[in-house]
Image (cartoon, rainbow, N blue to C red; front, side, top):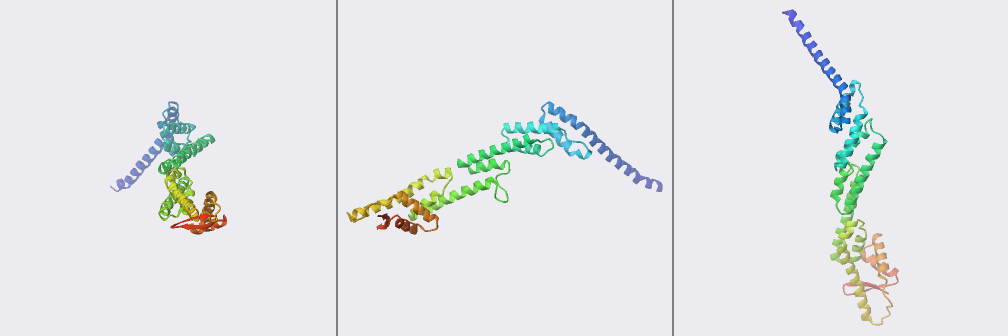
Length: 278
């Protein structure tokens, strides 16, 4: 009985070693089969099978084999088919695998860059048309919608969008206060095409308010008859100068009075309204 107990561990050790050796041998045999299977799949256009065999072959490279060029060929064709089918995210993923593999070449790298540029142009077109979320969705297909540093293209688009929106909100706050010059300055800071079109009604309100100042000045002049006021200050020059002074940090009244004085005029008041007259 003692002899049998001593032999039993050896038996299981031999069984274990045999199983390990069998597994290694099977893996080695399968690795020897994979290049041929991969090549046939590539020749027959079975791209999914080709990619699967290629991934299996790459995982067995520790046995000493090398992934053949057929793997890169299948990835190249698969990426192109996905791109044509509109599956851009998956196409970019496969193309990136190709570029990072030994089978990738400079043409594959250029194609990847070109696809990314096309997607950037598509995202910018949506953004210019007022579809921020759609633009970010396009950029997300190649991780250009956000990064921790906040320097991705998507981060820049968000910043631009929010800046224009804040100027719109500021204009809406200034109009009820009849702070026309500050409202005009806020509108002039809007540089996004969609926001420019979207704020046209506000611009019309602001312009009407400025025209009201001009009308009040004319009434003041008529009330004085020939009171010595020779002409109105040109509104375009006044508007430009007031806007510049507001941008420099002056409030709307300081900007208005100083601009009027620099243009050789003086501030006249007609009830609650004020105007610049020479």
